[in-house]
Length: 501
Image (spheres, rainbow, N blue to C red):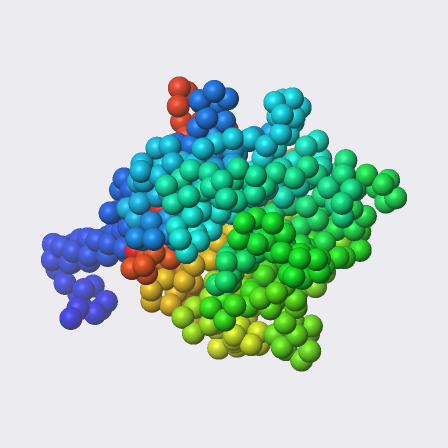
């Protein structure tokens, strides 16, 4: 072995040769590490990426993936939602394990695309947005989201057969299409939205979301207080009056700009429910009984059936436009990996991200990670990215959590490029993921120090959901704006999926 001194004492030609060899070895090691860091499974889709266009030819509307759920045979179900404001894309797609559309499902892989309400409502700014999808035991497909008519909201549900056709035994012709109402009265502003759906072992359908309050107190045009919402439906789509309080569970908070709502629900094998979201932007996880009541045995020290992380905030969130999530996953032992944004005062654009694991009882598992932070905010004094002159900070918005076959949590979401001071709009968005070891430490073998951006050509991309396939690999889904005809605006958009090794 040559030490530094022995190399220095070698004759010049030999010393040069040794230096050259050492340089080549280091170069090859660096190149090998760079290639090894790419976690993309190139056997998926086309070289690891699947782009699927979801387009309604008559309107030019395009859709992206809002949710991914498993289906029989290792297939995947995707909730397809409209990219542009004012969209009416309420559909599900079925995708084969390798990333191609299942053309035997619905119409070339998609359920029929339709809108609720009249054409005048659509032309006047009405919105129909799918947010979540679920597979039932008989193979039928549930789709949940909301309908908006000029700032008034109503829950929207549809069920399709295993072949992708509307199920006439559900609701009215396969759909539940209420007009915006609250407590039996029609509303002009505010109302109820759905963001996720699950099916209990007995077939009860549980949907979660939020109640949007009217903007001005006492106006009499909608709900007076914002709330997190859970609704129970019978298998035929009627409200289950034995669930919660006459079919609903509402957790209200004082009026304010901070977000309140539930964003995710999972039905446990025990029949109980886990529900996550925010109360005044404070991250929360509830456990409910099968009949929609708070399970007081969950949590620590009599916390009323819930786990809370961080403190409440009165600052309005910058992510309220459909991307605020509190994703979680349940591992093989019943442990709960929960992720979400925290909101320190004055932390606009610089919110830290919490990642923690809980025991099935709701107690925090302190053997997981060194702290509750996945991404400390610059305002905490623990900067995960170097600060740059004139830049406020970076931001990662978690959208989905999946646990791979080796017990490693994968968090997928939206990476925001730096905001420059005084910038009015957000920067470039990336389709991003982070992976952690089973003990909660960052998996440095994944991408660049545990972070990987899937960034095909286009103006921006987003990851909205993660799913674990039967073989233990994790698939992430979202959307990407693609280049076509010299442009890459919202009209040139495709569903985007990738799989990690």
